[in-house]
Image (cartoon, rainbow, N blue to C red; front, side):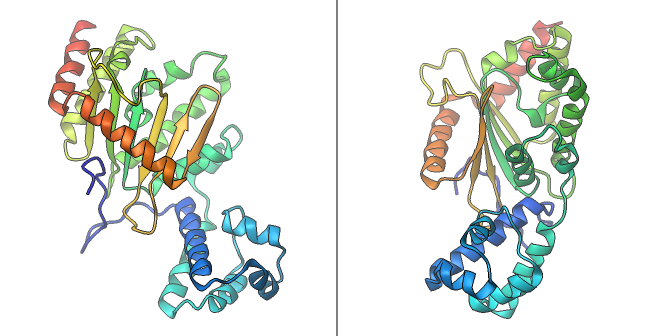
Length: 301
């Protein structure tokens, strides 16, 4: 197993990650599409059976629509699912109809970022890269607020709500099955005085405390200024999301100042994974990284 992926399938009495309607809808669509391909059932047969248009079925396969329970039951018969799988898929449909916590912020959150939050909620682990800031899941409230303060980026009335969103995401760091994090951070992020020296000092102390308090599930490596090469140089935010469910592949979130998107193309995910692995090898190890965080924090006294 890749050393960078913490995730593993729950065994025995282990508690799975929290249920997520986004992950449920995704798994449902993947399993329906996979069985259709396996049995070589064409779209025309499905639309004729269910009385749908091709466009509607396309929306179902792309998670923009969720079938009614009656229509899904008819489709499961057509696709020859056994009783056990039928119940699993009906349960997934029920969960997919629920509303996640992120929907209360839909007035300013786009559909793609809401989807990312939903995937993250149901994930087992994430792998982050940041060049100039501390990853959002490991930020203090003051640090997050300082990032969002410039009016050109976020309207002032939205700052409190966006900070609340970040706190919601960070709830996955605790609980019965907390999220595992591997973060690669540029040394520049430890030096950039976002919010001023006092806020950065508190952020570095918080980061060190999170690492030291959770060594089995929070791993942070720093790419030092002395690194001569790294495939992630020039990249901005990269957020890879891993699942304990073997049916769900890794996906990635990439973000710049004006663009952001979920990447699920297998070839692109392969390239991102290889690049991330290379950067992991170029970075300081966990102990050296922790020592650097402490050293820069002391310099801010």
